[in-house]
Image (cartoon, rainbow, N blue to C red):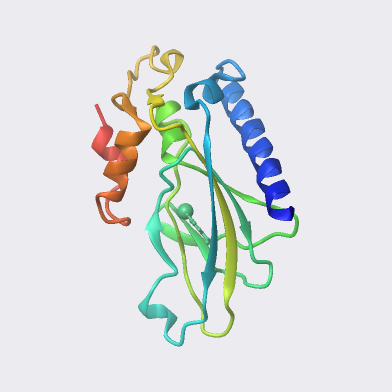
Length: 189
Ligand code: OGA
Ligand code: NI
């Protein structure tokens, strides 16, 4: 019951964020929701055991999230587990009480024609404490046609990415190593 309530609430939050992101781009409020269709929702409960030699491994190697939007709940007991890449440097994103980390996924980068960036992030392990995180992924339906929003391609820059379906993207994404180049590079015009 608790988990199912959590899923419903997180989905509502994701929809609200998608509406606000649409509006921030000068698009209709429900633009993103319409394009993504009946969105899939996956939950990953990540458990990172303590590791005697943390410098030899990652909890999760560097990656961008292939979906649309990710809502991450971090373990308040462990700082420094999540890092994001900013200006070529890995920075810790420490857990805050009553706060989620929101990741823009690759699909929102594509739809926004590159205005929103799907951030590189990774999880690292530590020697003494296990860490947990709960990631909720909102995903376009398989046949959603992902294409830079037309109003964003009309002033000079053109469409940065070619059109693709989410199914095509997803199979390309998992057909390579996670920490290779940004998967969207393969879809550039
Ligand atoms: C993920 C992810 C980070 C974390 O599951 O995609 O980035 O802190 N997790 O567990
Ligand atoms: Ni991730």
